[in-house]
Amino acid sequence: MTELADAALRFTNATLAYDGRTVWRDLSLAVEPGTFVAILGPNGSGKTSLLRVILGLAALSAGTADVLGRPPRRGNPEIGYVPQHQSFDRDLPLRGRDLVQLGLDGHRWGIGRPNVAARMRVDAAIEGVEAGAYADAPIGRLSGGEQQRLRIAQALVDDPQILLCDEPLANLDLHHQQEITELIGRSLRGTSRSVLFVTHDVNPVLHLVDRVLFVVNGRWAAGTPDEVLTSDRLSELYGSHVDVLRVHDRILVVGDSTGAGFDLGEPHHLPPIDHTATATAAAAAGKGTGMGPEAH
Amino acid sequence: MLDQAVRLLAYDFVQNAIAAGVVIAIVSGVVSRFVVARNMAFAVHALAELGFTGSAGAILFGISPVVGLLAGTTVTALFIGALGVRVRERDAVVGVVMAFGLGLGVLFLTLYPRYATEAFAILFGTITGVTRGDVLLLLAIGAVTLAVLAVVYRPLTFATVDPEVAEARGVPVRTLTIVFLLIMAAAVAEAVQVVGVLLILTLLITPGATAERLTVRPGRAALLSVLIALACVIGGIFLSLVSNAPVSVFVTSLSFAIYLLARFVVGPAVLGIEGRRGALGTLTETGAQPPAGA
Picture 1 (cartoon, rainbow over the protein chains, first blue to last red):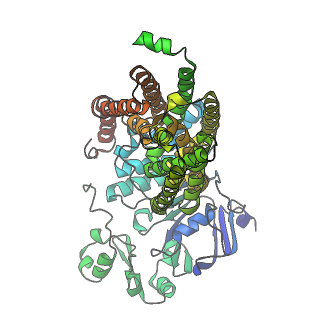
Picture 2 (picture 1 turned 90 degrees about the vertical axis):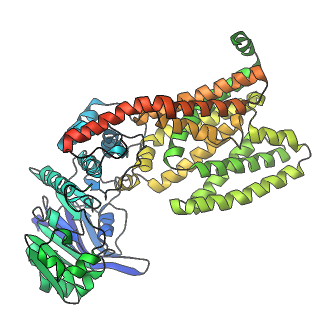
């Protein structure tokens, strides 16, 4: 039982329901320290809600959740959080440095006096994401990738044991997606930090992923990518036939039920198959994730 | 003119006005930064107009208009907070509450026989008419407001610029929204003394909006906002005393002039340098294009 007691996160028969709707039920999952977990599933399947439970912002309807051996609580300093990229207002009087600083002590009461130790930690976090060159510029004038780098520094500046990322690559072009992914991967080396990474596209992070949690219509499947991302397993989960295709080291999920805006691959970058079986999935994927490194 | 100003300082009513003006300007300067960042101009206006209702009611019942004003703004703040915390609801709720409250104000005015001067004072400000008792009250309200602001300053900043992460880090974002509405209620009650209900935004928007044009450092922006509010209020009081025109005329003119100067002359020079530095950093760091318009 000791290895279970040491889990960074553990859900036991956890069910979440609100407004009379069950989001997911009977979730049992243990995340070992140092594990990278990709959380996948269609829109509205409760991936963000799962993060909110861990953050202590939503309560389970049944079952239990443990965060580092304790029930979830608001403001847990051992959790860092990276949200989806949303641009800051161009005129917002805030530098990247200030954003990172808020991640360190923004939740504390009082005005906050200049403090050498805090400044050093902020500098180190900014260096960690190689954002030193623009950390003093107004954050609203930086590119999406630069803003997202600073968000990662903000999430890591307090050295959390658990990093929660909610679609951090959304709205970024492929080039910036790779950069941000590399940063997150690098920040884990030599630490026992666990990552929960909510994403609609597993491919950019596939090389980092240890475990996959796939949530569909209240049901879930968990395991290694090879265990979960199979036609049989996902067909069972969706309750209808689903094909999992592996093309050029990318994973693509195609099926009647996956048409509702969910797609694991990136149709833009696919070889010829793009025009046949995946055409509907490509159309259904809706918002593009960028056309390539040159696109801005 | 300077001689005249120095001579005026000997008068009690001038000292009262300056003392109250300093506190009011400090409160307005800090609060206006958050009003701008949180897009709450409409709420400020509603608080002021319902402060007018409270004030008119207080006069009718023979209570201090400052107390009535504060009661009016506070009740309104609680109403808005209870009914519309979410941004989408907020403007609608503000409009609904404001329309009803202002109607009530009209009723109070018609019930009061000598309403014309009183109404003018509330609507356009009369800082030189404040009594010693009012000054003490304004000082007390100002001190409490600044103390509360000091306590919530960091989490309020976090919740304002980055609400999602602030919530994830345990900042009570919803509670702070209501706390800030109450802070605004007090700030409005203060600022109305100088510029009146109708011109409230000149103290609760303009200094913060001007400071944003001058720096990207949050702390420096707060300080500049306070200094601008102080210059407008104190300058306005003196110009009013030497010219006999109402204070609000000069406060609004001064704040507008400073805004234009910051926006078109000083700001582009200062922020141009900071902005270029950011763009250069962008180029060297990632080889990406500088942000559009930089």
